[in-house]
Image (tube, rainbow, N blue to C red):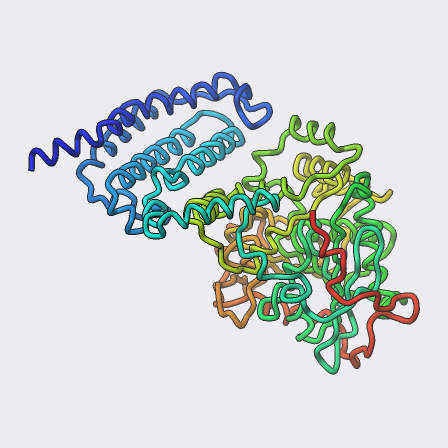
Length: 574
């Protein structure tokens, strides 16, 4: 037995040395960043910071204590709770298991050190994010030399998994992005974005889609959906079972949707004002004309999702300044109007970054869709990046078909001037929340001038539009408001059809909207299942009377069916 322990000690001697050196190297790295500010940081203008000596000593003692305990722990217990190391192959390989345990110890310690630095909140968030990226990338599961599961699969398949992994890597290099799903399983218009309809209007910025009624009667006020321009609209129309568009049509609404054009070099000069005037406002007016709601007193129901909600709200404020109130109701899904709380995205935004972007593309150019997609993926690096590196390349696996991830990989570009205006005036300077601080399309913008009732939805675990940021819209808009919180994140929380009977949503029965979301939640009640039914019941009260469903798309010769939905704009690749 003593000989076995001696052999084990010899085997793990390099790790003992790494443990003894790990603390000092981690401390040296953080101190270097703090001393030099932005000298070696991925973030511009990173202020200096310091570390409290007493807290550091406490962390060091904790580190050494936990390191010593690794030798006494059961192999499986060393990495319990982390799905990256949950497979049996890890527990059956002492070398890989110990490497994983040391990695997890270092990760915990580095994160504790990042939390312990003495600096402003933004600097701490930036250091924490940098440490998270570093630790996610350095996991032993990402490397064949340490990944016990990948090694076992290579042996079991006699090297076939490695060959397949190389093929997958070459395929992804050629297509220009990493595969998150089997993209060959989907085609826009065939099995995603397939709800029946037609294009009834188009210009250089968007196509307007009208959907075929599925009921004998429809509500007289149409429903216009404005999706985000940083993604494609069919997130709202993935498949019949999880399509919000189809659901709205089934409830008796005459549905119109903005399908944004995927910008190319011909749109490199397009501005935020053009997206408001020539897209959102134009879509509102065309929808009114087609449905007869352009007459005195005529109104339409509107919905904006994410950036689409920001665009829609801005457009309605511009119209209000012109004396128009076209909205019978406004629905905002995971939308930021007050950019005080932007979550993890705030770490990227400061004056230096904004100026760099303005210099780079403020006067013309394109923000590549792949850059946006990569940024959002690295907000959750283990789930949306390294998980696929391991599966696709180390194990030679083909990811299963998943409609949402297919959409997530279908990137869109943005015109540089439009993007830079949005970056500075919303994320950086938060002027949209200040009445009269912005002039858009020649009008002073005041969100409080929108008179329509508003349904505001936020997702509890949203990392792109934090729940507090979504809730903040209740304090800006003047119409009668209803706020609902759903479970899950930015997309999964929204795309939650009632039939799936998944997730919960929260509603406050007394209708009160205190200053903060935390105060609101203290009086809210959890309800099982989708929020869609609550929204549908609310929307029907603003949709007017029911009339016979139209027999054809559009209206007369001015707005006739040009091509079947989903149209050609949505099929253009970045």
